[in-house]
Image (cartoon, rainbow, N blue to C red):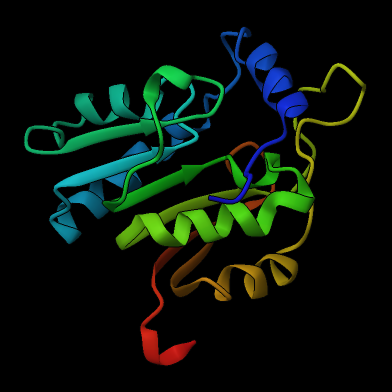
Length: 182
């Protein structure tokens, strides 16, 4: 498997996760994820970049977790184990945090995990938090036109919608690429 995070950046992410207000975006998208769970009849959900598992606790309140297998993954929380394939893969407020030189590796990994649908959100402006070296926590701050070709290399785009949660960004729902399209 290709590297998806450097050792130095992993330590940086673990430090950021000590802040109780780091990793709160998923709660803002829980109702959209719940609707997608219902529509797709997903039986499994991988929360890629799960952080403190706030998406799951929000989904429990929305009563969509009864028969749903929840599979958290976050390299900052090694106790979650490796990422697992699922009917629905959520990657909320994660991709803009990826080291730019490792983005393709992360997208490739995500493409192996999405069996039915992926729900990804990408914030396009600066984060409210900084890394210890002074860099903004959003390492990639690019427009939708920059993101779409990269996502399209690995996925079919079934929905694209602008969102204003925490500022400028977008939601994309993706599906696996069919073999005849490579």
